[in-house]
Length: 80
Image: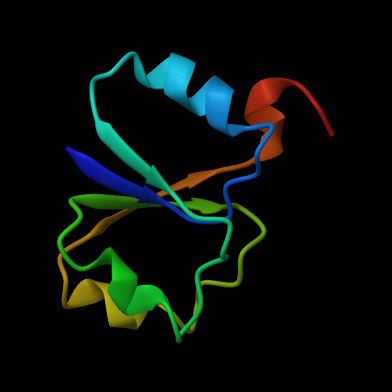
């Protein structure tokens, strides 16, 4: 599965790659999901967003690309 990971921080990428165990093709961007970059997800099977990203205005733009939205946050890594 091709996954576009929005709001990826440099310190998170190794943890996400390790958890992925090469099951999915991950592409990382430091940009948070916005109306100006939502269409970058076209061609991906899923997107991952930071839980604090504002998505209520952007989700409708992703619906047409049939992307699955997966939310994550730094709580997954045991840090605050």
